Image 1 (cartoon, rainbow, N blue to C red):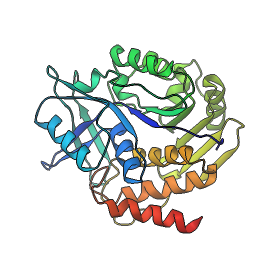
Image 2: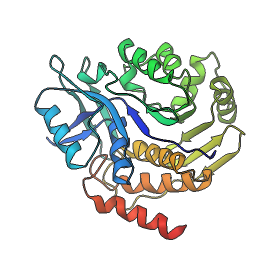
Image 3: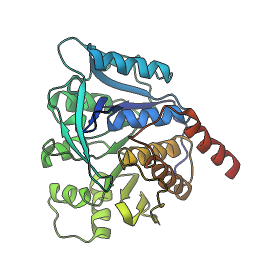
Length: 302
């Protein structure tokens, strides 16, 4: 990683409830999962989001405060409902999603000043409509932000134009091997081999970092000098589901950026953390010991 001295981490996007078919509701949303994980690991991310002034919204605030998360960038809207997603997990632990439209998180304003020289994360779902696209672009115009984009393509909430719009002024990108060719196609390139796709996107977006996740085939990290690191998947013991595994992976990539870890160390720890999250029911846990165990392990391995 390049040596940086970032002031803050800002996370822009959805916070919602994942509503499982077994009747269980779990707090989630990719940006929120990332913020929760980073807080569990001792950082103080600021999540910029919107919730409704409803039962679910109040529950979110209560849980955030119990986790000592910064709530000062959270919008509370009177006329919109807190977001929710219906989640169906198959017998292999793979989730599918039905996502509610026109929720509070589709209208996210900036509540407070954002410091320069900070990491700014956003995904793709919360930018499905123009309102947040414009707000996000406004934030990206702040000098010396390092923007990390995590693509999560959820039907029907994306198209080629949205993809190109949300990737303007991005520094780092996390994407999976099913999404990468779709992104290349959005920029007019088809039928490329994986290495060609990687090189094309690195150059097209002028990225400093690209992280490609490949499911059971592991992951690849490539920096702006085109130095490539590949790692196999870390086998999951006590598999519960894969909900939040990608968000867990992104959390550690951001943690590594913030702490100036070397690329190989960052990728190794991200793979391990994502594997352990698959042993949870859902994307996050309120068990602080889960996070403290990682901090202790990292401390002892330095």
